Length: 118
Image 1 (cartoon, helix red, strand yellow):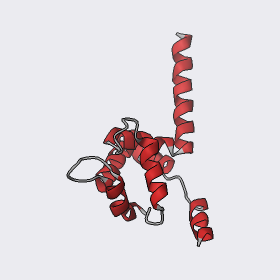
Image 2 (image 1 turned 90 degrees about the vertical axis):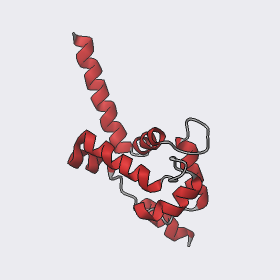
Image 3 (image 1 turned 135 degrees about the vertical axis):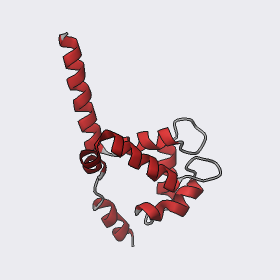
Image 4 (image 1 turned 30 degrees about the vertical axis):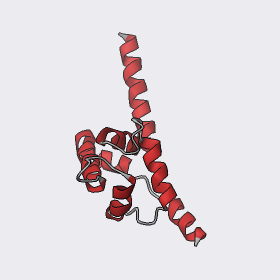
């Protein structure tokens, strides 16, 4: 059984770069906001462990164990309240996307070099 979980993790494909290419920056942010709304606790307006566990199947994350869900919350929770607000969720999604982070870093570096040349 552990092998199956490992296998599904190995098969994970980072879709954010593809989404960014297809949707553009604004479209990607809009889709991240939609994902946030799917996962959030409607009463609290944030993603809690309970709401993430309950709604994770909507995004194909049903195979994640409780400790993995808790780790996701902890990793993104910069405010220390045990939940993810919309900004924390979006930042976490970018951080979990190595390809998108590399593209963002390259764009930032290019912009900085342009500014330094002025």
